[in-house]
Structures are given as C-alpha cells and as structure tokens.
Image (cartoon, rainbow, N blue to C red):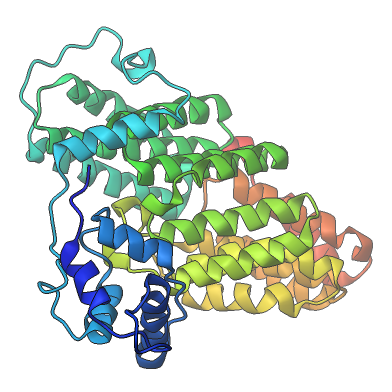
Length: 431
C-alpha cells in the first residue's frame, strides 16, 4: 500500500481557496489552478482533475510529470521537496505487480514457454546487460533495413536472429536485466513479424507476433504489449477484418494510463483508421482529434525504443490515412491531403517506405476526387521509387491506385500509369 504524501496534502490545505478565503483550497480548485498555469505559461491545454490530485496525495504517484510538478510548485509556492515529490526507481515488487496485472488481460500463461523458439533449449549462462545490448543492436540493424527496403530482404535474417537470441530467455539474470532482455527479444520478434507481414507471409507473422506478445506479458511491459497488439491489428485490418482490428486495438488500449502519450497517439490514430474502414466517419474524426491531443503532449525521452518511428511525420501519415475515407465520402480533399502532403515533406530519409505509402495514398485520393491527370503524374513518379521495395503491401497499395484510376483509363496519362503499375514485378516475386 502506498504511503500518503502528507506534505502535499498539508500544503494544499494551508492554501486559501481562490473562491472562498475562509476555507482551504480543494483538490478540484488545485487541479484547475494547475491547468490554468500550464495554459498561461506553456500554452498547454491540460485536464488535470481532483481524482489525479487525490492520487498524488495518496502517494500512488510520487513523481508527477515535469510540467505538473512545476505548476504545482508555482501554485502552492513551494519546492518539490516541500511538496513531498521524489524520483524513485521502480522496485522489483512493482515489476512483479505489473507482470501480474498484465497477465489478467493476456491470452497466454507466462509459465508456458512457446515451443516455436524455446522448445528444448537450455541456457544455464548468466545473462547481463551486454547480451541485452547485442539483441538491441540486432533489432536496430534489422529494423533499419526493413524500413529502407521492405520485409523481403530481412524476414528470414530477422527470424535467424530471433532463433539465436531466444535461448537467452532461459538464462539467469537480475530482475531488471530479465525485464530488459524480454523486452529486447520481444521487440526483435515484433520486427521479424512485421517484416513477414510486409511480404504477406501471414503464418510466420502470426507466430512471431504471438511470441512478441508472450515476451511482453512475461516482462510485464505494457508498452511492448500495446505496440505488438497494434501491429497485429494492422495485419488484421490489412487482410480485410476491420472489426477484428478494432477489437485488438481496444485491447491494446487497456490500462492506457501505463502508456506514454506517444503510444496513446499511435493507438488512437489506428483506431481512427479502423473506424473509417467500417464507415463510422464521425467517430473517426473524433479519434483523429483525440490522437492530435495526445501527440501534442508527447515527451519523446519517455518513449520505449520501439516507438522511435512515431514522430510528427508518422503521426500525420497515420491520421491522414484515417481521413482518406472521410475525405472521399464528403468530397473534401483537404481533410486528408494536407496531412499527407506534410507527412511526405517531413518524412526522414531513413523511412522511405512510409513516405511512399503516403505518396500513393495522396495520389489515390486525388484520383478518387476527380483530378485524374494530376494523380497520374504523381503515380508514375511513385512507381519508379516503389520498385526498390521488396514489399507486398507497396504493390497492393499501387494496385489500389490502379483500380481507382480505372474509370479514367481512356486518358493518356492514366493509361500510362496503369500500364506502368502492371509491369512492376508480381508481389510474390518481390517477396
């Protein structure tokens, strides 16, 4: 049980109410004062409430976010120490509680080791941080190649790395090292899964995603669990099951209070995409707005390594994708086009596949809303770049552009676009 933060409570009770000087400031008034301070000084629209202040006073949260600490100090005219705030390391007891809590929502028994990668393995060695860093290095290399060239070039090599490193999970390690190791191997399995998904090797993708999810559950890692479920939802939506994807993304959002603002923004943007796919456009618009709010409060230094890809460009591309269906149904190009254009402009050189997806979606939207010549010019340029990717998904997106162009096939530029897309290597060959 948490130790109450009496210093914070006493300081609040010693502060007069802003509305009634004869009584102390209430928790709700303190929360409102903090929100007002952050709006005036930082332009941040926050929604701290009395419930959160109560959690601070109960000691459930000993180290609020930096901006909240600063605002509380300013409003109560006190230092962090005087308010009882102290940065504390997560204890092994807390890690065990996380593992217990996360497994309440897991389809797996953490004691039953998946046989795909660990059956019969023995690893009596002592595992330390050096082994964890080796796994993390492998993840970085594989992810980099996958982003640059697509899943076809790395799916099998990623699987090889996974088979080589998975036995480390049977080794002896300190609790903190064990958690880091399970997260690193789980992250590697998720990258291997995504590379298989990119080339339409769905059985391999499913096995690897499930191993990643087992690693997340065993580590008690809410962040890795959410990221893995999000990727599983992407695959589920891609093969045409938008309703199943919605279920997965909502499972990923369980205990979102344990997730960073960046992860919440990513999950909410995906939910907007899936809502759009089932033509719940009003709800999709609301989710995009909510995703923007989360993204506006993100602190990248708090994010897990696997969330490094979700920057401003990725957020615009993801929300832009969600808005394409809305833009088409409402005949308003601007609803999605501006986001996609900005995503294309901002996308880093290390993420050319993401930029290509945004370019294809912008061209398709332009074609669907009746500007076939402009769309065809964009599309022909894209096909040249798309040839570098060993990616079934890129080919499928281009086929979607060709289908959108079919009503205009008698236009010379459109006919050339359709012919160019038709001459690209078949997806099976690319994989």
